[in-house]
View 1 (tube, helix red, strand yellow):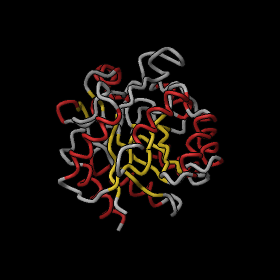
View 2 (tube, helix red, strand yellow):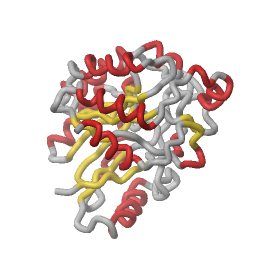
View 3 (cartoon, helix red, strand yellow):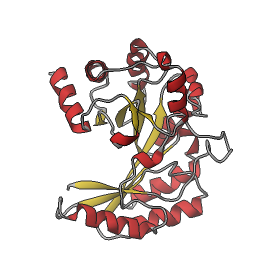
View 4 (tube, helix red, strand yellow):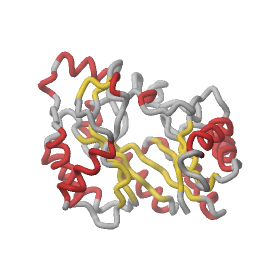
Length: 278
């Protein structure tokens, strides 16, 4: 069965924006840089899913779909609201499961119990946890407002609930060296995760990090494409072999990127990494 994710905006917020754990959000964050045109919180969940199906229909006939709650923190709401939005997405024809992006400090046991029940009903369920770094000093520096212990706890509780778990890790955050990044594989290999998404640091216009970069560019690791390819290839070679690599790099709109300017699409970066691995 071939599957395509349909990105959705569930109208959720973030505890690092609304004052629950912090304000201002992560210094690198600009979520509108990654939303496709059909993904608008002003539309209902069903409307967004149907628009996504139309968007992909010409490319992938006979496709089944995963409803991907990608914007902000997709588990950050009372359970009754989450249930309504998740079930609305699953009620659309040819939607066979959910992928939910969220923070590790927003994964309550009640949510995990509900998702576990959906999985038992035959739906494909996956949580994507925005870990970003396994160093508390880095998390503090980028105003992430959660800890490494929050991440470890969430990963283990997801595993205990039988939920397929993917972690996001950002490569090139300020203060981290090449050796620091590679050392994270030792932590990851001991964790009950299924997949990882890698994301190079992109400094985007309109973010707090953009201001920091303008003031102190020397604080940032200005990674060339060759640096990134070599680092990620080495990183991957050290990972446990059953961990899927779901993303090698990400891309924001070129007009929003301050650095790095590689001029390559994610697929082109992936090909370079695959060549390096061989």
